[in-house]
Length: 421
Image (cartoon, rainbow, N blue to C red; front, side, top):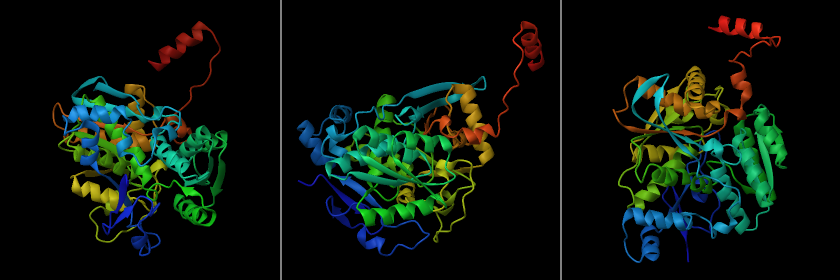
């Protein structure tokens, strides 16, 4: 029996799960180079039928959610068995609550979802896990991905745990820490003289030529199905409620779509009756998704942001992100690179959470809304932190000053402490 169907976000044509792996075949023929693909596929399940099969009747929403979790959400995942998932602990990351910033009590609720605590220290593990399991079930022994670093290190780590081969194409200027991870996990690392988009295009050609399975975000629809799990976790961690706002860093738009898809699953089941106001945050130095949301013609400006993980010229999942934002009245925002660095510093000093610049962009968005009184008193607000600051030390090292060493004596220490005061 067919478990799910793919539906094209552009032409609405439906495909059997065995008919297609990546983009809508019809719309993909019409795609223009240097533009986002229009034929991105959305994964659709038979929600009501699944609910009745599990519960015997249309059960209470919270009870049904608990039943879904008990089965590890297998009814709404595009894989046959949870046994094919990696043995690593992926997801179930902590949600922290803070009520002060810089010593000032906040008039609202702030929650920080720390996905840097995934196995390879980024949110991307959620997608890699599903892609890996799907490849395992269909006897693909090699998975390829283009990446600025996080998706590549994630796929490399997950494949290492699954005994699969990973080939990672990266722009040659990708952060060293992420490249080191890829190599340590035993994947084949291939730096490309060019941009992320150059690596992306080459990986697709390689998939077609060599029969490799392609993990690319905005190309492989299952990456969205992996990332949506964060929405289920948040619903449970917020005591079976949803937040008023959720701030998400945006590059390709796949994390944004994944978060929306997870909440939409719960909406389709009748477990929730609305979706949080999701705020898509981009750097002004890489704003190709946000800037084009309401534009009739897609226009590209070359990215130059310090936040490498969201530095994207062609947001490959643009049309699905646009679809979700318009359907559920989402909001968009850009912040400067300076805002991002300040947010990273503030987050670290106030909460003890050190995130990479791309991740700090979401917190910069929250701070902008807070400053401009766009958040209601006592409102509930979630900021999604997607990657560890240890992933990109080079960027923050440009803006911090290491103290000089002293001779080990109390006099010198006392003098130094006096001067610093």
